[in-house]
Length: 509
Image 1 (tube, helix red, strand yellow):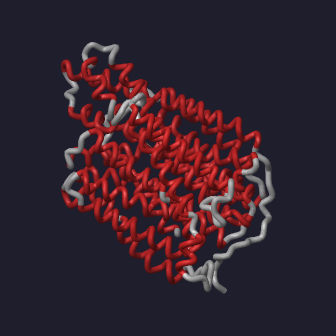
Image 2 (cartoon, rainbow, N blue to C red; image 1 turned 180 degrees about the vertical axis):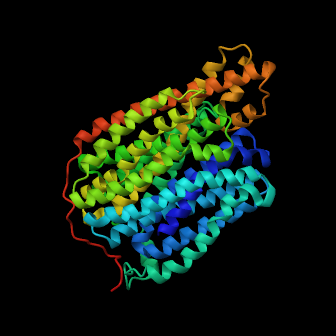
């Protein structure tokens, strides 16, 4: 499962630094480049609850292998693509698989390890994620700089295949789990699935995430296409809640009892905010370095190390500490406090910020977010109890992924509005303000192609300053969201972690 985590981490962190190069090589328009990243987030999010629910009926291992196959197939399609349509299809299929891998590995840990001891194993997963998230931007940068030579950026997708093949061989051999609903016919298993709940949640999540993603980019926020889709999504989500609460199915897609106390409610809210903040950092920081400091993709990947090099090791250490002391609230409180301070300090990131300064400024958000991972996970699982812990683990990943999808949209909307506002103040770029503001990634190439002498130098300087100033507002709003999450944690209780393992799909003796 650590191998699967490694593949997931590499895939999540390599694409960001290489996206400008991919856009150039495939002649992608700004909107198409936007959908390359968004399609993966959408498909990996909406599929998770249904897949986790199916694993309760058909078993964890078959669904894990299905997710692995989808991830590999999507990687191959993306690696071989020659146009936008093929790349979009590959990224979407890849996202379906990645969502399953991400969600099911967490659920399986709840089947294998008692709650008190899970911190150590979450530490193993976090350590693997650290390797992938640190190496991902560097690998993506190297491949991006190769261009079309020796496959270039396509190796971002090819490197997933050896990992997928090795994992597909090892999993059936090592992960010998008890079979759920043994002796029940396949047709009865099909009938036992909450298909209505699955359709309501999947449809409403998609209807919310798509307009949230394109709002202000493909269509204005005030467009009827955006507003109607959001309204339909919210109504569908409300319908799903009513269906599950009123007992619409004997085996609900998600047991709503996992939300029935303040510890669970505030922790899930924190997970949602953490997803928003984390993905804003992952997506926009590499672009900041490429746009404002003219870094190559490889250098931009190296520049993200203050964040990527701290999140997972801190999460590893915090998870082990929670296992030993049996308390998790300290990790949540400290994590949010450090995150708020760190994001607030990022206001001082300018277009001319020196290397030692931006390294120091970027360390604190990584430390804070790292502390939150095990703390929030322990809180949701302790609040659910061992009977419903698999549902809590699945919902933890779904809400975090949902927050990540919203994070890119929120960050993009804030950036676009602030960037356009900054450019219209300058006559030199007023006419192209809207065009430049629509896509942060495409603007990176515009800046790199500009001459640093004469009139072009003046325009480039205006764009660099507007870019940095616009991101300041993004960081400030993320700090405000984190402060709200910090306030909510005062409703979180310190629940006991010494619970016996109660799983129907543990390892066979």
